[in-house]
Image 1 (cartoon, helix red, strand yellow):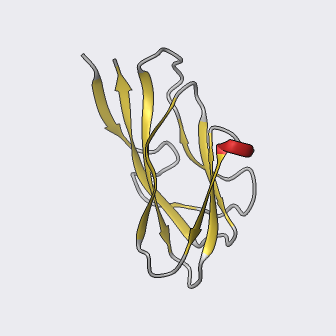
Image 2 (cartoon, helix red, strand yellow):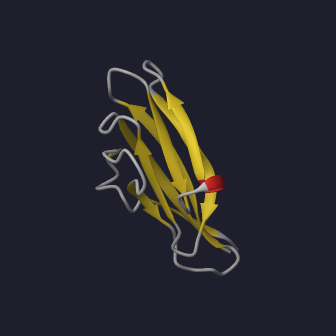
Length: 118
């Protein structure tokens, strides 16, 4: 029987916003996935971005790497509120999720991880 345990992002302090201060690779640490490579053991990652600056910016999420298909780009504009940016994508093998923004200190990342084990 599979189990799921909701956990904090490893880059967060007490579940609070992770302020994105980086403007290039490597981005700020958001989460380091479970070390296991066993099938059925992984982290299911849920993230939302919160634009706190007075103008829009481009947010880049480094999902397990820092080039090509590992980069997910978002254009954030003012007035959107909390924007879902990663909805239950899975990662394991100590892979890392990082983020950087075209305007440092303009975005915070909130979220959680469901640690899943079959």
